[in-house]
Length: 361
Ligand code: DP6
Image (cartoon, rainbow, N blue to C red; front, side, top):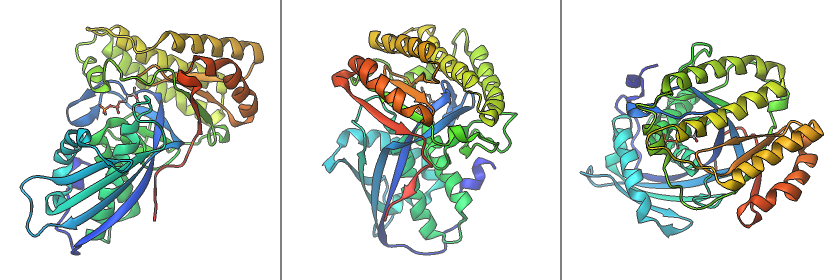
């Protein structure tokens, strides 16, 4: 599939107005996307667990204008309050997807969005937010072109979401989603995410992720800047090669359910992501002292109990604690007793692997 295939033929059915609503989850990468080329093409393939509780609900209302607008016409609100601050990001998104959604200038849009998690908590609201908006836009396109297949709908939704935020490409459909071309993964593409196509051991179907909110403040360095610093990074080539290798290794780990190997790979990916930040120029550190305290506590607990609790990190100070469901009771106790104290206001969110976005009527 090439970019051209996402440029639609003239639409067959007129649509005057309507509204549509989608709920899209956040996701947590196991092999990280860090570094990109032009047009939101990832420098390396990545794979993530889809989350269930951390999600964005977006309602898109649309009304056809009397004649096509010169510019995009839209309003956006968060939790019922107009958010002028979100407009530039949405405008950039509309500009990027306009070649693939030529109806965009023919309508006025009202975008109403709300997150199940605190905004700027460091949980990737761009992944759930952009995928929910992309799905709403695809719903309009499906009304204009009712013959569209479900496969194409999801693929193009992921393609559009990617143009909003790379990781959003992995928040459309499936529990384990890979985005980025990888020689060992049939059907993988830099343009959109795919459901992991190989055998996955049942232990991963309901894997748990508790997100520890270590620092909810604004990050000093945005992901966009961080991605950019991978250009001219002294270790970028090795890092991108390593991501390919890790994806290859995951194939047998997913199949066998070997949790010791899973833990080694996932924790190494998280620390490598942050090592890339610390070794770029300019260098920066997003982990906080409590991030390290938590990591050390997790290692000590795992050693003492022989459970399979491990951690991963996003581009921030928060810690995702990953563990199999059959250890849930034990690990939740450990989190409440030993880790909550390192979280801002003792806050954490229990989540688990979900199945993807869904339409809400
Ligand atoms: C560390 O998807 O937020 O979470 O494409 O610039 O929007 P943009 O970046 P974004 O980057 C996510 C980086 C990451 C790793 C990952 O999710 O794979």
